[in-house]
Image (cartoon, rainbow, N blue to C red):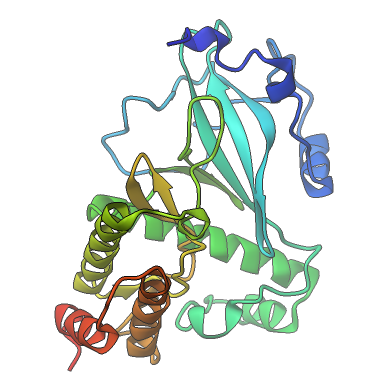
Length: 292
């Protein structure tokens, strides 16, 4: 196995990433710093919210650490996900993180606002009007609400033992999350990208059904579950993209979200050859959630 000091030294890897215009502007607004090595900023561990304790052993929490941008992992309608290396200047300790950065003022609206933000109104009427009218201020508030919601959701799910990446910290509209992938920076594939054999398919469905049951037992639905927002990391199914997590009791459409999550995920497995009884699964989930 390579020494971890050398893990990211390949020029092809470290220079293949590119910053979005939004990210260039964000970095340009940051105060100039005399950073060691190829770092882009000092660790932001001392700012914003931190994930649940105890902190994982792999996580670098030293304030002397620097963050280095390594490229874009995914672009989306509401957020981009970047690959970040956080490590000490001498490279004696380092870890990879996924930096999910919600876009704000350059986007007119988030395509998943309606329904999911039920019950998340802010206290001040000015802020509610700004969000409803999609002013620049309002769009920034919406972006931060999504970041706050996802960080809270991941913390709750992680603490409850569900298969989600560890939420490292939140600073404004940026979430730093456990990177699910290989040491060389290759991200774990989405479930939708896989063509599993019979045994692997059955094992992945076992994990998927267990995750759905765990969510239901917590009184929750993912809200947007499909084979496209589930990763498979080291043969383990992992749920991602959770800002729209739905409380099935507080949200008027909670039961429908629960059933839709089950049908979407089961549909992918059924199309690969598994014989699944979706109505029976939905009934089981409703029972686990305590819905009558």
